[in-house]
Image 1 (cartoon, rainbow, N blue to C red):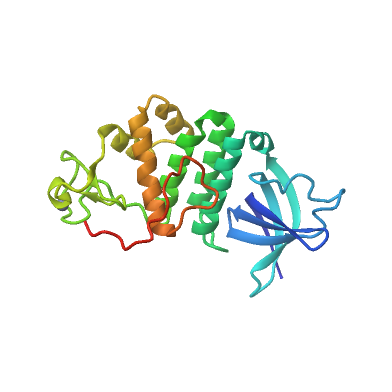
Image 2 (image 1 turned 45 degrees about the vertical axis):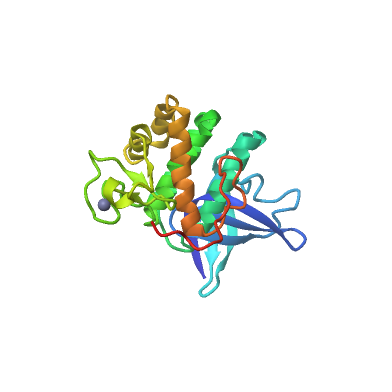
Length: 258
Ligand SMILES: [Zn+2]
């Protein structure tokens, strides 16, 4: 039985039996981990408030070979975002982040970049909860990129022509194409959206959120539309926790070519 110590972000908890909890967390050194916190629902639990969603903790757990479920032994709160949960729109956005992480993060596989990205996004929301929407765009872009699902918007996905000076046209799946390949069927990505998308790759979430405050409504909507279509393409379903900012229903029909 191996003892693992790592930093972790609590994503979700479920009740188990009379006094226990199943805890799902994103860890720095072991990726997505599902564990049992024995006695966590007792009044004087050793876990205290450490298992509230989105608490950043120093976690110690026992791992058994060939057992997916680990056993949580110690937790220490490093940073609590408990107060964010009182704002329903922020709480909803965090639940959405958590759902996407459960879908995208690899179980028991360290992903330092993903962990750092999620920590930085949380810290940006903590810094200014009003920035939660731009932080979500940042999170979605990076989640797609780190999992290999973000198309390269610098070149046409069909003929590979550089799209630097020519416009970028996107189809319903948010794939980038040149004017010629789109044959007039795509949506032109406005410059502001394009610049904002590329800013996610250069700035921290806090810097990006600040820069996004001056975006026009058209660019915000287009950006959200792009990332949500990409996510729908990967997940093949609308995230259960997504709110009004995620306006699409899954297209159950065959996807249209072109
Ligand atoms: Zn092309």
